Length: 422
Ligand code: NIG
Ligand code: FE
Image: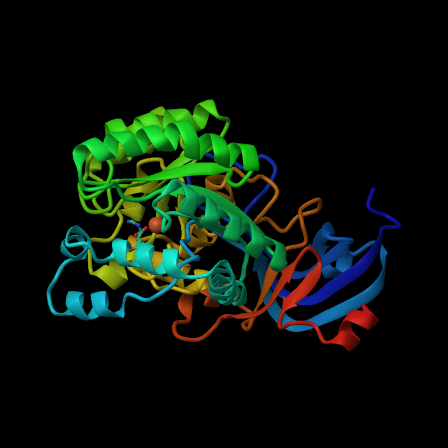
């Protein structure tokens, strides 16, 4: 059936190809096993994978062959949760926190997220694009070929729209796929102003985001210091009515019912979960909603770890993200987030690979990403090591040697000669 295949490029010298399974894979519960194909080859035609198998069984011809010389290959990783567009820094917060002031105290006194909103509002669009571009390239060097980016440091309708426009400009400058999300981050202090803000989000912001095609989903921060579940429900229902998907930041510091709300509304994902209770694990059983854990936050803020192991054992499908942001998780590598999820959240290495690929893609509502198999975009990462588990095991070095996206090597960047030869 595969005879006479003709590929643009054949990649050989792959000691192990480690990928989640595709067709027939059951979503809604953690896939515990991945496929590890030894001595593999990948054929690429245009920007897609046309064949994957044992190198000895390649049945076709290829215009060009690249020998990786004995490296493991994994799918391009998906970072399903970042706040990569911001200006300023939170080094003062870090000093305060390391002297004993909590993240929530800093926020309540007008610092924290508020200070990033002020700095982001004052920065020019060009500055925001260029700062974010460097951060996303760092994620790409760690193997990411899909990155979600949230707004949320705009606060006003005009500034949230501006952040989403910046994300759109950024996406045009990058070779990878960027998935934009509107984040309704923190409320005004006054109760009456809160009501007015929700109304503005519903009547102005969400309709305008849809009109301009600026986001695929709406996220809201449900927390004692942020929005309550009634306010969140009102915003999320409006998003659904406008044809957008929904997701939430929930159960980060307190268990306030964000999980139940999100599952009831069929959210793509519930993210954070550090304060998720045992009663809430069961809500995820066989749900399509992904439980996204963000180990960088537990490490950086010193808060409890999200119960990844317990969630999986209770029947949840878990994804992992960096939550790249200046306040709670200055983590610039998705590979490192996966390694932390094993050490802090109790995932196995195989579960972490699924969490950073298939489940992360599902948390973004994407079906055409994060698997190395025929028909998928040719997005994959070549590791430094011949064993894929070094992705998880190594700390403090970049386990990724090359990142490939849509059939092109984007890290390290190709020289002009390589491009001409290709
Ligand atoms: O995912 N929890 C709320 N929002 C972000 C942090 C944003 C910030 O501190 O700047 C988070 O942790
Ligand atoms: Fe976040």
